[in-house]
Length: 159
Image (spheres, one colour):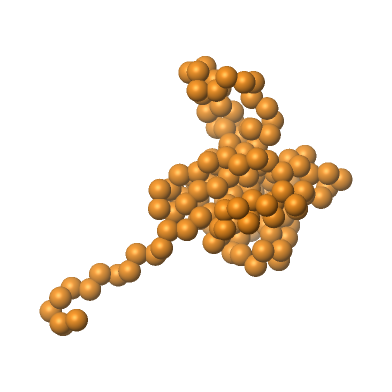
């Protein structure tokens, strides 16, 4: 290439990202990509006797082939660690060990409220005909978490 032609930096390739809204009964799951910066809910994974349904999570990882995983970490309104903060971080560590993928954390404060409001709007507007189930709420919350990450809320530091 001639020296007088400007060089443009290579754009990073678009890739899939899988996000999780950790809970003690269910783990909401959403998939998105870095090209469109959009997220869509996937079926939630159950948690039984404190153990995530790894078969369901494995299935989602195989189906979406993400390059990165995002886990929502719950904090209290004042920013202090919540009762599930440590468990959500431990879940992120387990994901990293199991899949060998980078795991990033996002502050998930109010993601469930935001998800609930979105689901109610969709139902009121006719876009959703059935009653909102808890599994739906958890996976839409995971989509909210992923949209936050895609918008630039990339990392939170441990408390």
